[in-house]
Amino acid sequence: MPDDRRAAVLGSPIAHSLSPVLHRAAYAKLGLTGWRYDRYEVDEAGLPAFLQGLDRTWAGLSLTMPLKRAIIPLLDEISETAASVEAVNTVLFTEEGRRVGENTDIPGMIAAMRERGVERVERAAVLGAGATASSALAALARIQVGEVTAYVRGAARATEMRQWGERLGVRVRIADWADAAEAMSAPLVFATTPAGSTDALAAAVPERPGALFDVLYDPWPTALAAAWSARGGAVVGGLDLLVHQAVLQVERMTGGAAPLAAMREAGEAALAARQRPTAP
Picture (cartoon, rainbow, N blue to C red):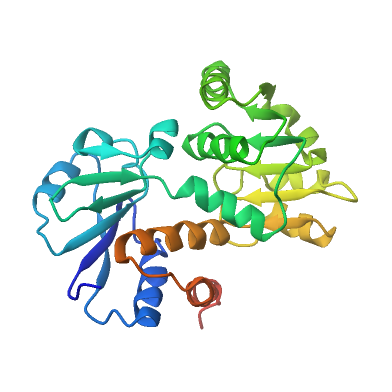
């Protein structure tokens, strides 16, 4: 593997990102002492100039919001997976200087579900309708899900989810967010909404829940995830997703086999440190 290479995560806001913790843990385990991984506050307006300033020492980039779609016109090519949801979370720089966009969120979701024994479901519910919800639909399409009910707010979001379902080959039924408590009975529930949005649904968790995939990781557990676990249901969390998608990024950027256990341990330690109460 080459020495003295660089990578980073870009986004706005970015200070909260755990990506540096995960990637640096991987570099340490792989013995990549010359590799660096940093974070940069970059918005859509500043993205072109940032890319222009990179030299041949750069191996790749991780992207978070609001850059996953803004990056696409600036790339030389994107993978089929990234194109399927019009979202790139990984950029690889080839030896020829080409910029290649990938999406490790979708295979990361699949890997995280399989780790918890979720291989195939007859039906699923998706809470929310943003970019993460479209990735959830793409992941569900790949595990041969039956019908998906999307609980959304507003006609525009409903139309968007229907269109994503048609594009990804998933049967999507639209339901109003006011009825989201009904989603709790699905064999698999995907929660893709911001922190606090699903707290009120914790009381609706059934006696014998199926599986919950809550994409949040800070704060953790969410009220919904805590209630789900208390009733014995399988829970896939945002840290699971973050680690699995980062594993794929490390492997594509370095060419080495990413150390999943070491990366997860580093992520859990960093989260625990954040949530530890500070002395008065």
